[in-house]
Length: 140
Ligand code: FES
Image (cartoon, rainbow, N blue to C red; front, top):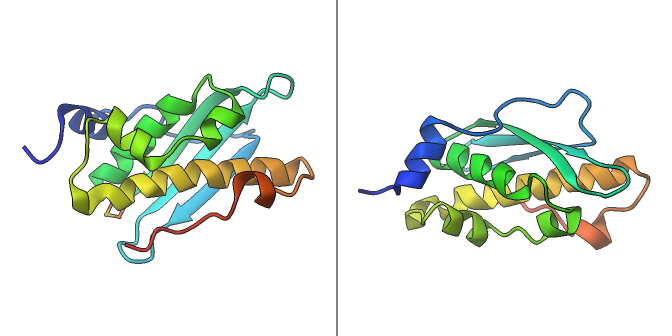
């Protein structure tokens, strides 16, 4: 079997699909090569800086759907600092692995979270670059 049970589960039954209308940060990231696009919405508690809600919309492959679903699950209820530490490797691990040709899909999920956090800081009047770093579109 090419995909783990967890990948299949998050692909067929993705968690946190949708939009947050009054989101505190919205990110979007695409991959020019495969044409997949991921949009990420975050709700952040102004006092505790905890991510109280995360939703996504992914126009893309099954692995992109599964990784964005898992990424939202991993950051919900966590602090911004924790979310900034979320790597694509952690997402892949939580999904019990991905085939090598699909690793870039998990990078898309990682960068979608960072892109939404970058937007959050921009809205707060804070330069996101020193905190979030550059948002990189995965190249393959
Ligand atoms: Fe492009 Fe999966 S093939 S994100």
